[in-house]
Structure formats: C-alpha cells, structure tokens
Length: 234
Image (cartoon, rainbow, N blue to C red; front, side):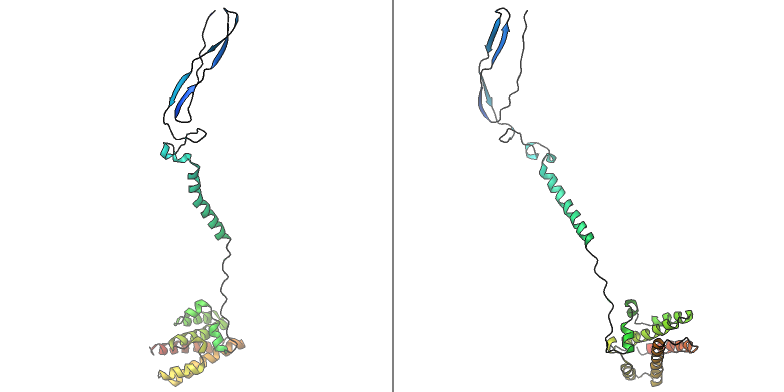
C-alpha cells in the first residue's frame, strides 16, 4: 500500500521585508516500519516586496487613490446625507412656525368726529378707492334697497375722494377744511353747500337709521353731478 498527500497554504506578508518560514513537522504512520514517523520540511526564505497600502492589521486600504471605489468609503455617505438632513430639519421647523397674526384695523381716535371716524373705519380695499368708484358702489346698494350701506358708501366714498382730490390728510379732513379748499379752487359756493348737505344727510341717516326715501335717488344723481364738477378742477 502506498500513496501521497499534498497540503497547500497561502501566506500573505503584512509588511515589506525578508521572511523565513520555519520548518513545519509532519507526522504520519509508516506501514513498513509499523510506527509513526515525523518528517520535517526545510526552511524557506521569502522576500516580500512593496504592495498595496495597508493598515497595521494588514487590511488593504481601498479608495480612489488605491484603486478602490469611492462608494466603499463611509465618509461619502455622510457628505451626501448631511445636506439632506439639514433640509429636512429646516422644513420641519418652518412648518411648525406659527403664522404671524393679522394686523388689526386702525382704530379711530376718540377726539375725531363722526366724519373722521367714517374715513378711518373704511376697510383697506375701500381706502384704496380714492377715485369715483364709490359712486357705482353706492348706486348698487341703492338699487338693492340696502339704504344703510348706501349712506355708508356715499359718506366714506366722498371723504376718501375729497381727501385725495383736495390734498387733505384723512385725519384732518372736516367740513371746514373742505369748504376752505374748495373756495381756494374757485368752486361755486352753492355747489359746496350741496356737497356738505349730502355729507350731513348721509351721516344723520346712517347713525339715526333712517328708512329709505325717494329723495335718495335725487341725492345719488346730485352726487354724480358734483363729482363731475369736482373732476374739472384738475
């Protein structure tokens, strides 16, 4: 009975240098001698050259500079994920931020009269209507039979219109200022009296809650005539 057995080992040096592989004994049973025999291989000299960069534990570094993939580095995921994480935090904080409170409408001063309060109480869209658009709004309320809204639209509209037309601050507008400004512009006195009469009537009807009257249509027509004449002042 005879035969052979081969053993192969892969040896990887961790550092550059000259290495000696010590003899490795191998014991086997010799059937001829009917006893165990130990065989010792001779020493082997190995010269290890420069290889890939490795750490102290013998692990070869991987990366673009060593021929490895950039995705094999844990740092690349940190660099990519950091901006995304910051964006998520920003959106979450922004969503939780309460909306700013709506600005309160300006309150009229206690020293102001009814006509000044009418100007200040106008809503923001109405305050922007310094032209003749208030006439159409008042006429619409008149046709609908909403007399209180008709008086209110005509009163506020005239004060806003005259404030812009005569360059009078809304906080300072009054019947006296209106008369003086119209007189300085050579506006007929009788027409000024008619204008003041409309303001007085609207103010009294609004605060006294007077019912609608046929004279409202005549007052609406007169208001249109007065605005046309005021527009000619330039």
